[in-house]
Each structure stands twice: as structure tokens, then as C-alpha cells.
Length: 183
Ligand code: ZN
Image (cartoon, rainbow, N blue to C red; front, side):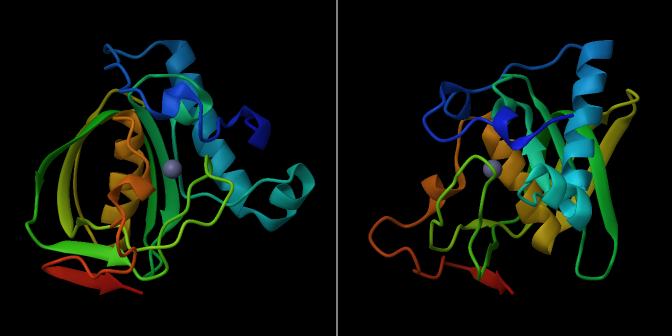
């Protein structure tokens, strides 16, 4: 199982590099990796398991955060309405996005960042993603609100971008133009 020691932290080159496209169909090893990444997220959200293995709760994980520079992400969370988003995705790509932005008023965090970084992270308010799932099926998702932000955070990791790269350096709490806050 994936543990915190397996997650690379700031300073590791995999967090700065663009990751490689994965050829389809994915290998058994890549399939197992995605399943392990999803299991980690579920474990990290289970109080008992998280306490036992000292896991920090996370809603998304990208392969480069394990030092594996492949375009694979796992997402697992329930939105504010209780709708479950649970995906292991191969080569996720944002194919369109709104001009309007949004940002989390509480800012963002990352399993690869062991310090609080304050500030608003401007994101596209709405995105459409295309990807392939673990079973090889095509996936198309239209996302807004919190889910849209989670997917953008993880896809950024595939391009070597950290959440704080988006924060206004002069004024971290500058409200992004044309944006809606998400509480
Ligand atoms: Zn992250």
C-alpha cells in the first residue's frame, strides 16, 4: 500500500517535470498503480486507517507525486451535495474551459507540500475533461465548483505545476478577475 513516505515532496524533480503520455491499453502495472493510488485516497479519508498509518487526508493524487512521471491521476471525494467522484484516469486532458474563474476561499493544499501556503489559487470555473478510465473506457466529464478545482490541481501535477505557482506573488489574497469564490 502507498504510505506518506512514498509521496515525494517539494524539491523533487518529478514535481517540476512534464509527465509522459501513457500508451493504451495501459499495462497491468499501471492499472495496479492507479488502483493503489485510489486505495491510498480512500485510506487517507478513513479516520481509523489514516491514524494507524499516519496518512494525511487527500482527495487527489497524481503519479508524479510518487516520482512516476506518467499522466495518471486518482481522484476520490464526495462533493458538498454528497455526490461521489471516484476516478483513476489515464492521460486526462482539459479540452475546454470557461473564461470565468473560481477559487477556494480556504486556499489549496497538497500532499507534496508540508507547509501551509496561503492565498487564492485562480482556477477555471468550469472545465470539460477527456480521459481514459482504468478499464480502458473513454471518459468525458463536465465539472464546475469544487470538483473542477480538484481535477485542475491534479492535472497541473502532470505539467510540473504546483498550486502555489498560480498565487499572486504581490498580493496572495488578490481576488482574481471575473471569479466566483467557493467556500
Ligand atoms: Zn498536489
